[in-house]
Image (cartoon, rainbow over all chains, first blue to last red; front, side, top):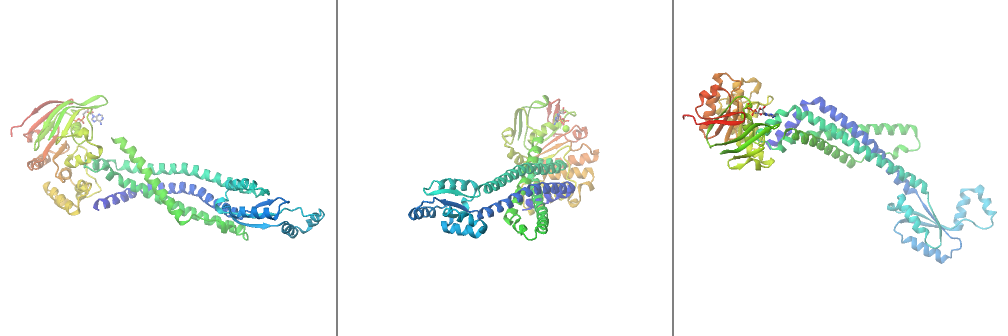
Length: 299
Length: 222
Ligand SMILES: Nc1ncnc2c1ncn2[C@@H]1O[C@H](COP(=O)(O)OP(=O)(O)O)[C@@H](O)[C@H]1O
Ligand SMILES: [Mg+2]
């Protein structure tokens, strides 16, 4: 108990004696974390947008013209038991024509000139959430295409795939930037701890000579590193949140009536906690590195 | 209690100790003499596991130091009090805190710490200075605090490296008397020094080193 108190006091004393270095370290770590955060935010937002857009995507399954009522019902049965499909509506040839005429009244004469109804019957399908990714969609479309009586499966493929591509790029960029900048912040923290170790090397030697275990000697510095990482990530979240609100305000003024700003989301509370934990962990890793190097120098 | 068999220690291939064999019994008061560079400090460092010999065996209480795992070294050091040449006090901690450190690191209770620190400070005659900071004390007092810190654990042996190095003759005899009284209570004491004043006052066993070799080991009269 007393020992724990001592260790905490030592960690606090470390921070206080190296106030400037500590502040600089927290600020730089916060800035590095914030850079990663920007990418993460971009990723989170595009991902949300992508899934909300995917929700609106409908797939058309066009039927062959010479299909009997019996085969149409069979196809419908088959589609209804498909787990990838969330809902489906049948659109008959007549219905398709009526819709077309309602949508494009000026062109309707063109169709009348043909004498017979050229529009095919179709099923309009919304896919289940787990089948909305571009890969799943493509696989599903290829499979459905093979059902006898189906003439064509159509959906806005380019759009879905382009969006998925962008999200994937951002994901990769976020990972790369995240790894590089995490390494940078580990280095920053490691350097700060190294300074602290250096300025107290005599005390550390004394502790070793009077029989302090390696753990006892190391704990204050691990605590300091953890605190640095935690403060850095917390501060970066504050910076990000500030920047995010500013950005949202700008968007709101620029696109007053579109409601685009309502689509933007910040990290959830849980996500914030996770990010702070990551900061704490990186801080520990930084001081651990310094302690290892410091230990090698002595032994 | 302490046995060395053909121990050699090299720094950059140059021997600081070569082929040292000696034995020190429990309760002995040994002076380790020899000119500067003879290997006295190196020998003390070997005994607390701060350095490891390239050759030979060191046994402390029958246990071979070369077989200690790194995690066992702190355990050894808790049984050995050290007053090293450059082994200073922590200036920003009070006398009480400085002396309590060896107890603190092994997780002693508050009451135990209070009792043992008071005892150790009384033994060196400085219990009235426990709330002062080391820079406010004289060199003689600082050295006595170091000794209090070294004995607070009730160690089986006390190692001192040039403990009178920067003290005048009066303070030197004060420190020597202190060591004698600690030794009288059963603690084995090894003092490394090249100070002839110490030799004059301690009529005990003297081990003389030169160029890393034991050149003589003579029992004093008493
Ligand atoms: N850490 C070290 N690195 C290199 N040489 C050392 C080191 N410590 C001691 N030595 C050398 O070992 C020899 C013995 O040193 P030391 O044990 O300090 O002697 P003493 O304490 O008797 O004056 C000296 O020649 C010294 O230069
Ligand atoms: Mg020496």
